[in-house]
Image (cartoon, rainbow, N blue to C red; front, side, top):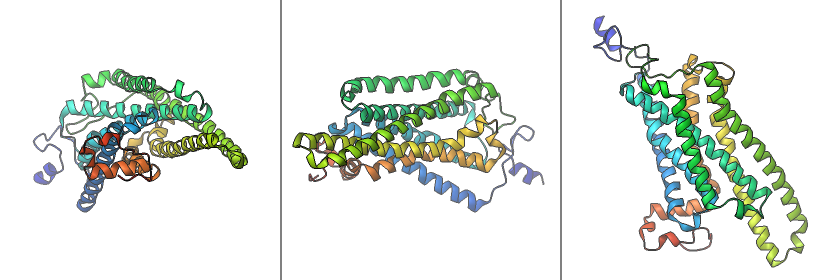
Length: 336
């Protein structure tokens, strides 16, 4: 009986203070380990391809792609840092110590906030491109976007540091036993945090994309009614507008998937329900949020021909050739 009791503990040598392991089916655990490990590896690999593509090919050095790059960096770090730690927690015990516990939650909060911030910036970019196309090149410059991206990450680091400052000083303050890693935020702070870092930005994103949708539909009708009378110069303009609308549609899909993945995690906090009261829902909501980092590059691969072409060049190591960064990656008919 003593041996059985010890086997149920995270730290058998600490009989009175160790947490107990949850009862699990061995086959279920093995299946989860394999599935989630594959998701983690796929997330890292796909987002690394996005990062290399936009960083390497000069044609892709645009303000919009810089925002996609920033989002890909946060998604890459989710797959590299957060997913593996969550996979280790399938066993129900925390073995990485108090320091890593604090850093894990800090990194998790930062990457979540940065992802939301990047989505807001992407929505603003598409709003200006569709609703004010003539002023877009002057309003949305490479340097301004770089500043906005840096501010987004800096604010995420600083803000979440302030939220978790007491927890980071004593990461074990909320643990009831050894082998547990939990953070508790009081209700008032939690509600304010959710409003500032999720529902406020999400409201802005939805309003901006509704406006983009209305203007894009209006532009499409105008283009169809005047298509027969378009001059050569007008054709170029029409093609440019069509390209911007396609980018808006693609990034609109990214935003919708983002909302689907993030809402189950955040909505219970606003209505005062504890996600941890339902273990299955808690695990599902966290991993759905993480899987958003894997879905984004899949969306790019489906909608963006340049991403498929750049993937081919990267996988075949053709980017190692001299002057490969000047490849005409946007030309669908050019040989690569």
